[in-house]
Length: 192
Image (cartoon, rainbow, N blue to C red; front, side, top):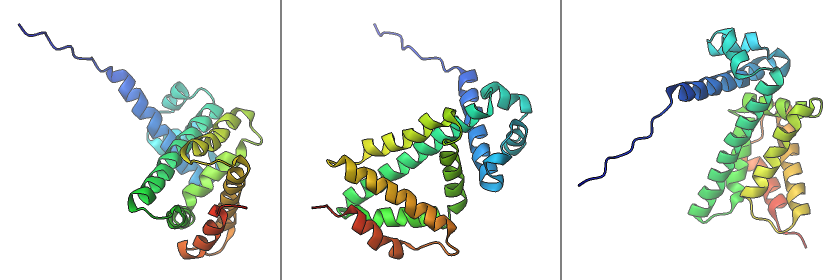
């Protein structure tokens, strides 16, 4: 006698709700890329996502809720990217320096608008306390991905990466991976 299979019933409403939230978050990021954080309203995001205004207010009661969700989504996306970079270096058995330089060059070149939007969200946390935990989450995620035995050196490295990205955003021409490589190599060298 066979035991009947138990199928877990998928709640279609929850799946649709999760998809809608993701659409709204991605639309928010596009609005920030185009108009800056100041351009984010429920109405503008709804129009960008092509959904009714009530969808934005249903899923995100306040703009802070929407901005926090967007910042956390960006953090998770970046964490995946960093994890992939580290894994690629491990698989190739190469130094992470070149891979990190390529990642930075892409962030400042083809993905410049997205990087600028992410930094706007990140910096907004200085003025909006509701965003601070989401902004700090990025540092926690990086700390969990990278093995380090010197907390001070690791924090200095993260601060330097932020500095490189901000400087690259204000350059007229984005730096290349070849230009960034020696700086990244210097920052990753063990200290005496």
